[in-house]
Image (cartoon, rainbow, N blue to C red):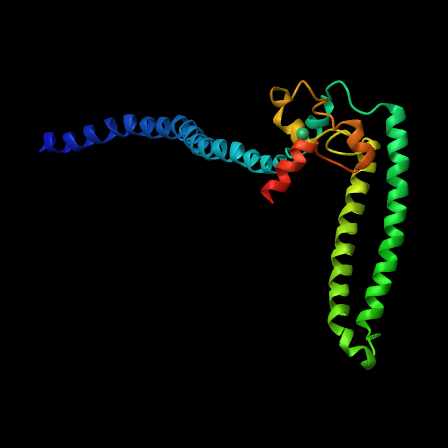
Length: 216
Ligand SMILES: [Zn+2]
């Protein structure tokens, strides 16, 4: 009888002792340290790839800057030769006078074409109607041709002012082909002064001008 009572009594007080410290020890050291490494590891990997990806997209605005350098690279290396200062001054005056003459002619041709289109052709001249429409077509083609020359004159004047892709008097085709293609018997890549005196707005030497006209 006495042994049965003793067994439960001795077992009960002995085990509660070790159980309590086990609970307390597991919670305080275990909970705080494992959490920070788990939280830190996952956010680090996703943020790392995001940051380098963002700067890659803003790199796109740099592409529009690229087309500018190739234009500036062309005229800087001008080979020896070409029109001298006095030549440029003379040719500029020729170009300016030519432009004034063309603008006046353009005005007169436009006024004439306008008068004709407004029905200046009376019934009495019906027989001449065919020749009148021919004249109108001729006037229009003249206006077109003069407009193209005016544009070429403005480009040439800009070149003399140093604002062109090529220096004034240089054949653009020779310049693009490079020194290996230049005929040593000619002033290539420069357009001969004799040609500039006749066609001061020329952008090509005679051989290249003829080549271009053969293609067209
Ligand atoms: Zn040429």
